[in-house]
Image 1 (cartoon, one colour):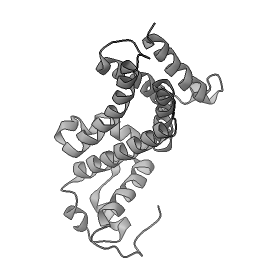
Image 2 (cartoon, one colour):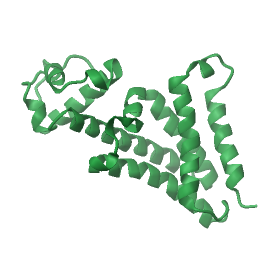
Image 3 (cartoon, one colour):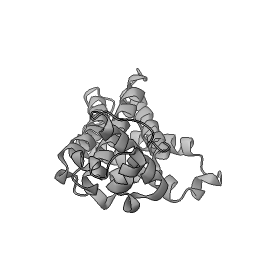
Length: 205
């Protein structure tokens, strides 16, 4: 997003403009260099205007992460709905959309899952948004257990295990991209392999 100073903003959409500008700046320079004053300059508004929407920088980051979780969950829901098959197919689909989102928004993804905003419980909207992502995966796993596709086990633990496997791939890709860029490991194949190994372990015998 370029310099927005020439645009006029209605009171109702300044918050969204600030969030989008913040995400752009987050990708460019990281969260430590973000400031509400700098965002105000980028948006072409007074330096006090952002404080009508965010009490401080931490509130801005929490709102940005919240929006990230909402967008991530929306992408995962769409991928799930596009697969009319079994819970096995749905887990593969949402895993790919999870990775796709992370690679498209690496700085935002790191903010969402990093320590800067821990504990999420201090930010109720952020906590709820992050829970919705978990709930989506949880529902797919639970359906697999109820359908007799997956073995009877604690769905909470199965869900965390499924999430951890895919999240680990994302972390490797973001932090050690050379493991994939050397074409030793194909990312898409690795996602499928990780999901399939997990699924083979929880399939009902």
